[in-house]
Picture 1: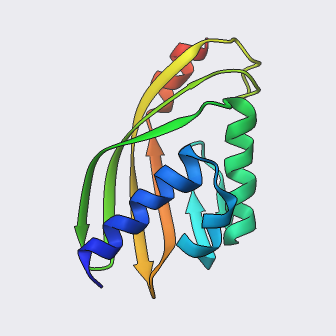
Picture 2: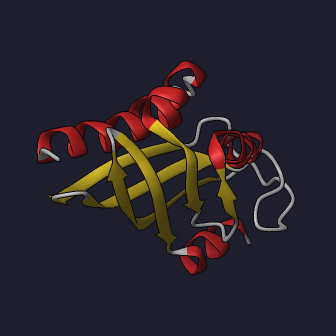
Length: 134
């Protein structure tokens, strides 16, 4: 797999599926059995499972945004260093809405096969996020 294809898939994942909430892109970027372990701790399988996770984040922070700070690709693996921002307007990590802006960092590790993302494991600095919501 070309590193350009891998970079494009991960970039589309963040720019279109997350930041633009573009549902039409989900079937074009994620494999049908996509396994996702999100930074909030939940694990999902399949495109619809990922959509439910994303929609839960959106309910917590409708302006949730992912910024890719660094992206490293080798063959069928890609790693991203990320910065997340949003406004806490719904239940998040068990904390009722505060209306506060938040920002925290994380990293994501992707596997790619057949022109699709097939898995992602995302880690976020939840201690820093919890401090901002408290």
